[in-house]
Length: 115
View (cartoon, rainbow, N blue to C red):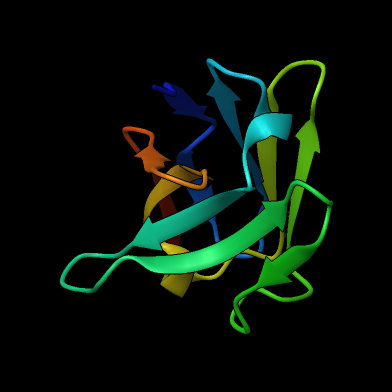
């Protein structure tokens, strides 16, 4: 089992920045990948970005150049730096840990971007 706890969400004006954190109860290097997903009202959950155990990163086209995923292995924490936020980035953001056999999810943190 892996427990994931997100923090850092909140209300921000368009053009602003937020940094989300995801603290894991297990060593994140043991995960195949860590990622951030988001779900807006009435929409399906979508992948925002992910980082593999080897350090490779992937981003959704909608956030490329604005969001950055990083990790601190010593703290077992993954971060999502979000810059130049847009109203359409408003969603609940979920941390995900992917292993060979399971996927684990955090409880989610709300990000609201106002115009």
